[in-house]
Length: 361
Figure 1 (cartoon, one colour):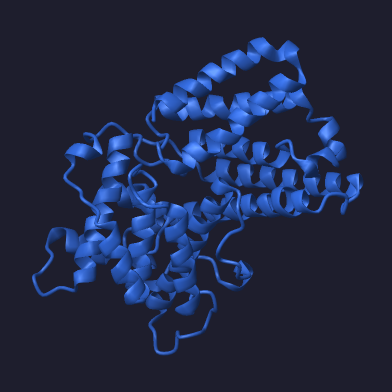
Figure 2 (cartoon, rainbow, N blue to C red):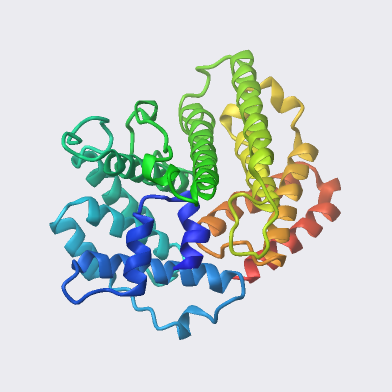
């Protein structure tokens, strides 16, 4: 439970932390079944963080058995805030389970339930709710947003949550949280959460502008327009990275990831790789003349380098997202080799790095 709260909860703060901690101490026999299920899923996900960091044995010996079919059936037949919370936990766990169902499909169910429950419309169905409950609903929306955008970018498809995210207030600290001795910790957690939200917003913009719209409508934009768009996105990437440097801090162990420099550097070069990936949009861009094959290879080299750093420090999650991010890097290596045979030696070096990372799976 502590591992979940220390790592995953910082990017997905959609649960009532105090309720989880109370349930972890003792789950009364007459408590709601949802509490027990949420606690079980939290423990299973927390174990994946401990396993990744080398602080727990492999999942095969952990004793966690996730009944995907039963949970999915129950959560689709009984839609509620709890069902959405459970489905998010199920999706997060399935990322680490090679035998599990498609995370993309589970996230699709989550986004539709979010719409039907009014999470995408601030003020709707919030009458009579306490400020703390309203804040939890908004954190739930942004957690769904982060998960949805992350999955969309990893599979190269449009996100399921098409609502204008600017309408929903970002997560903030509640009066109750501010009054506790842990308010500094909560504020730091929410800073990380907001930074992750900004990352997913940026990734989604690049996906939509460069890869989906840009690839489907060849010739619509003039080269100058493409260059301007690329320059603006690059500026936003640099700004996001600078903000990340301000909130990053040394980690005494390797469980927490989202506010470490290793994670920040890996995400930074992934953003640049997404932006300058060889596609129809970038063929029309003047900036493509600068980021030719050798510069593209350098981006891949940096991306793989920082992923290897995360792997060596046991901070690289060996899940479907990481695997999906490595596939475009492999394709860029092939593109560079086909475009410039003189780069065979450095490409061979980066290929071995990629093989080492893939071998960890």
